[in-house]
Length: 267
Image (tube, helix red, strand yellow):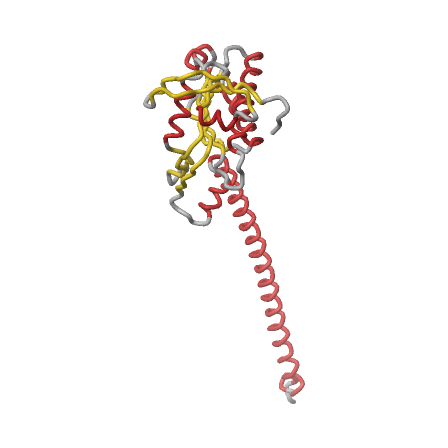
C-alpha cells in the first residue's frame, strides 16, 4: 500500500506548510525591523532634542558674556574678531569707598547688594541700548554706539549714567553708604574677543583710558564728562562746568558734570 505521505497532494501540502513557516518568519523579521526603525527614530528624535537643548543652553551662556551680533559671527566661524569703531561713548562707574563698605558688610550681604545694583545697571543698559562690557570688582564698564544699527550712543550714554546714579541714590536710602562716581568720554576704540575656552569681549584705546580717568576724578554721586562729550550733549542736557582737571597721563583737560536732561526735551 502506498504511503499517504508520498501522494502528490501531500507534497504540495508539505511545501505549503514550509512556505507558511518561512512567511511567518519573514513577517516576524519585518515586524522586528519596523520596531527597530521606530526605536531608532525615537532615539534619533531624542538625540536631536537633546542637541538642540544643549545648543540653546550654550547660546544663552554665550549671550551672557558676548553681544548677540558677536555670537553670530563666532558661530559662522569668523576669527579673530577685532573691530575699530571711530565714534563711540564709553562709561565707567565705580563705587565710592568700596573697601570700607566691603569691610563693614558680611560677605553674603555685600554680594547680595552688589548683585542688586549690577543687575539694575544691566537692566538700564538693556533699556537704553548701551552695551555692558564687563564688571571688574566694583567697577562697571559700558559702551554706546557699538551696534551699527543704532546711532544714538551719545544720548543713550547720558541716559544710562543718569539712571545709574539715580538707582544708587535710591538704593542708598534703603541701604546706607552706597555712592557711585561716573566718568564718560567719546571717541574711537578697538573692540574684540579674546580667549578661546573662556571668551571675553573687551574694548581698548585712549577713549577708554580717558573715561576711566574721568571716573576716578569725579565726585560722589556725579557724572564727570569730557568737554568733547559735553558739547555734543548740551542741546538736550544740563551741564555744569568743572574747569580744568589734571587727568593721570593726560595732563589738564576741561571737564563738565552732567546734571540732567533739559526741560522740554525727551529721549
